[in-house]
Every structure is written in structure tokens, then in C-alpha cells.
Image (cartoon, rainbow, N blue to C red):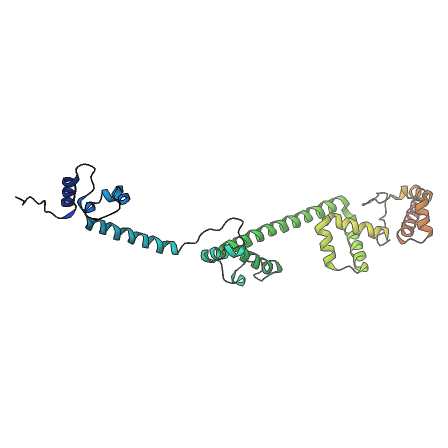
Length: 280
């Protein structure tokens, strides 16, 4: 039996005391004796707290959780606005693993040596906050694309040369050698040909220098009535072509002025016409 005081420990005892003191909806007994202001006396959370020890435990547990959350948040970074400046994003990039110095990026190149492109890309990668793996992936993608473009250009050039060989037949080799001599006489550097090749293609480039060789007299017409390549004139048509040229005022003025290409064309057409006349 109990002594009638409702003595008991823990929340059960407190709940019984509270219930006996105020009935349904009444605050626990400890609240009635606490001297709390009216606004706190009606707080639902406090009304569900049976006694002071329970209140103390809940307070300690809440503070502990808040402390844990605070320590966890200390390791986090607030993400800046999308349009925030580099200064705002720098701590985020560094936390994610951006190298401290742009030179730390290891960028692959075809021959394993740095190029002007890789040297220029490193500070840009650092400014953009790229991780080492991301910068490396971009460099690998670029190298693959460039190699593919070079291979395609090389194959296209080979195809053009093969088509030109098939078109010209036996005339190809002498015309090629004449074009080479013209190029050498002009004193042009090798890189000039490379630039032209990239822009006009191997076949068009070679045809152009073959035509130049013909116009300058470096390449003479091969015997026969075949008109040849790149706009050549057959021997049987040379006389009529020369007559048409002389009837052209502008062409005639260039010839009389000693224009090299025009004079060479005159000599070539005249020689072809004479050769055709001798055959006849």
C-alpha cells in the first residue's frame, strides 16, 4: 500500500501527480509550482513534460544535437549564387580539390611535352575551378579530336593526289617535278605549302603549282594531241588559241609590256602550233 501521497519516481509518478492535480488538460504539478509566466504555462511541449528531471534531460539532449549539427555545418560551404564572382567561388573550388597552383595540372599531349595550348589552358582551368581529373579529361578529348581531324585531312589529301594521278596518267610525274622546281625557285618556305594545303587541299595545291609551272614554261607540253591537264591546249588547237589571244586587247597589251606569264604562254602556243604544222 502507499501512504496516499502518490510517491513514485520517473515520468510515471510525475504523470500521475500531474493528472491528479489538474485533471485532463491541466499542466503537470511541477509547472504549477514553477512560477512560469502565463504564456509558458500554456506551451504544449511543456504540458507534455511530466517532471523537472525529464525537462532537464530533454534540454541536455537538444543542446547536444544542436552542437553536433553545428560541428557538422562547420565542414560545409554555402554555395554562392551562380553569377557570384571568382572570390566567392574560390573557397568552394579549393574545398572540392582544385590544385593550389595551375602548374599542378597534369595535361596529356601526343608527344608528352608541353605545348603552347597546354600552357595557356592551365590558368584557365584553375580559374574555372576544374579538378585535376576534369582538366585531364578535357585535354584528352581535345587531343583525340585534333588527331581525328589530322587523320581525316591526311586521308583527304591522299585521295585527292590519287585522283589527280588517275586523271593525268603519265603526265603526273613530270608535272609534279616541274611544280616542285617552281616552288623552289620562288624560295617559299615549307610551312607556306602546309598552310595552303590546309586551306585548299593537297590536290588543288599541286594543280595550282602545276599550272604555274606550265605558265612559266617550266613544264612543256608532251608530244601528242591530248590537251593535257589543268586547262592545257592540244597542239592542233594551239594556232587558233594563239590567234584568239592576240585578238584580245588586254592580253596583247600584257604581251607587249613583257609580262612573263603572257610571253611564256605565247611561246608555248607558238611552239605547239609549229609542232602541229610539222606533223601535218
